[in-house]
Image 1 (spheres, helix red, strand yellow):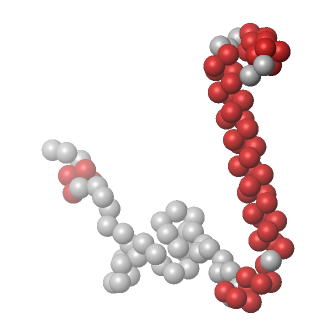
Image 2 (cartoon, one colour):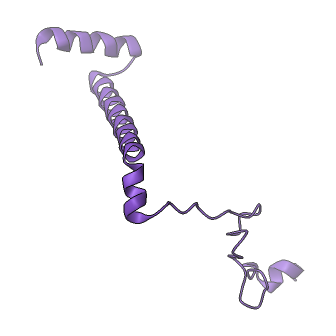
Length: 101
């Protein structure tokens, strides 16, 4: 790194109350975050651009299953329900339900 860049890094780190190492660490994390966002945006653009090709090759995407309001699984398929139609077994023990004696 040339001296003018190093001096600028020291000034900016000092202005932020950081060590130079910490300042550089934050710059690297920021850069990685921006690169990650750019990758995701590019991938989304690619998928949108070639959506018809993917549908032709693999079929239309299947929407994710709906989750019941209680969060116990799929509201429509009955996930979380045993074959006999009863709900999930409680994880609480009998003594916890009746109160410890």
